[in-house]
Length: 209
Ligand SMILES: [Zn+2]
Image (cartoon, rainbow, N blue to C red; front, side, top):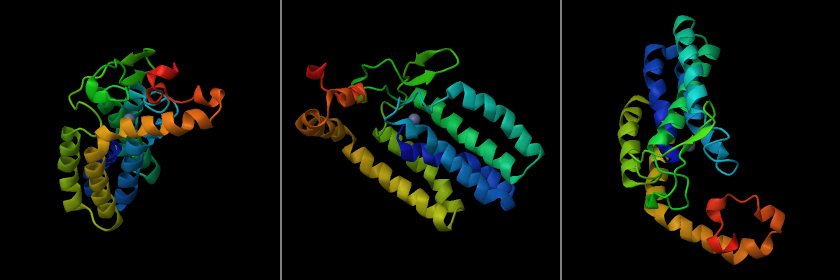
């Protein structure tokens, strides 16, 4: 799923905690947001493997959540919400598309790496690809209660995430062609071979291999 969806889901998971324990609302929501966001920082360094841990984040969240419920402090709530957001992100990506350049073609058998079993999990494609119309629908549905409940900076962040999601969904199918033109037309001539080898393979046109 696209990044705005993950960020909104991370926030939504923290929303009940923010309502139940208002004195820790800010830390819960911030940690949920960051937990939803951080796994995708591996976008160009082993995407959906380096920072995606569907099993380990979930196991740690299962420990951290009851600890935070029993001893609600800034640290325990931050840990629980951060891990919950990251776990939800990593598991949700399994239900999206694969890692290919054009995930709507559904040719890749890789969705998220399962470090625990040392293998790739196959994409379920309930949401066919990141930036699919149904991905945007999910974002909007999750955003509604957040827009109602939150105010100030967090409401602006939710609104911005939805706007980014709309634009991303609108241009998603154009992005591979743009990436190929940029890479084939410029980067392949401009960057040395050893650097080229480090480009994610989904960006390298077939004729280069
Ligand atoms: Zn992801």
